[in-house]
Image (cartoon, rainbow, N blue to C red; front, side):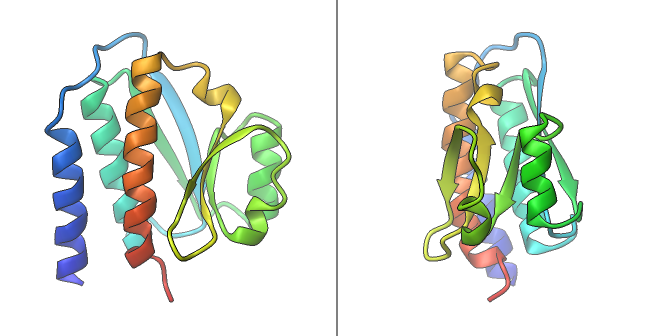
Length: 147
């Protein structure tokens, strides 16, 4: 377990060490997950949020909602706009009908999804930071998710 946590920290340290995007008005991206904050998944999401906040000088903030129902309710909340994204299984991904950006979890079939409408609120540089860090987070989730 210590190795996994060290690997997460090393991966995000690398991302954070690169040039950050200049700050603009702060935008909050709300993402839900069905795991507690103190789980391996919660720690990966916390590291992801820190990397995004640092790299955008606080212009983009990730706000995570934990243990908020089931995948169906998360998808419904994305449709009504109360959520910008979610961590979904492969079956949940198949039920999403709106335009999304998907960050696949290797070998799992699931992934992190963020609505295209929410991504459109960000500048080109902010989107690039979010996409880069989301891809790293998705890869790190491979080890953090229960098997």
